[in-house]
Structures are given as C-alpha cells and as structure tokens.
Image 1 (cartoon, rainbow, N blue to C red):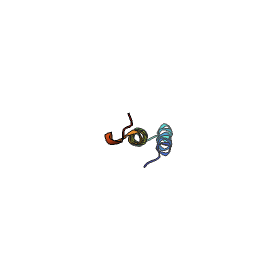
Image 2 (cartoon, one colour):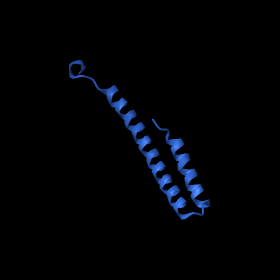
Image 3 (cartoon, rainbow, N blue to C red):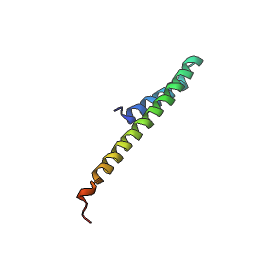
Image 4 (tube, rainbow, N blue to C red):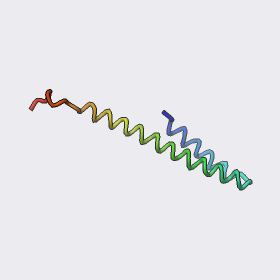
Length: 69
C-alpha cells in the first residue's frame, strides 16, 4: 500500500516548486501532480480505513449456528 504521509509530502513539494517555477507549463504540471498526489493519499487512507472496518466487522461476525441467545 502507498503511504499517505509520503504522498502528501510529495504533493507539498510539488506545490512549493510550483511557487518558485517560472515556466507556465512547468507550473501547471506541478499543480496537476500536487492534486493527483493528494488524491492518491486520500484514496490510500480510505482503503486503510475500509480495511480496518472490514476486519472489525469480520471479527464481530458469528454464524447463526454459533449464537448464544
């Protein structure tokens, strides 16, 4: 899995570089990369949370035949 912290750091760097760049095409490319990296970080975090929630739900699952009521 991709590390969301690493992706966010890369996005931050791209934003910083875009503020110091002078070529319009480079500025735009860095802006695009910063947005894409931030989106990837969000997706990685969502997958991590979904995986944790799935494990929690799975651990609570008890087949009907094993219920103690």
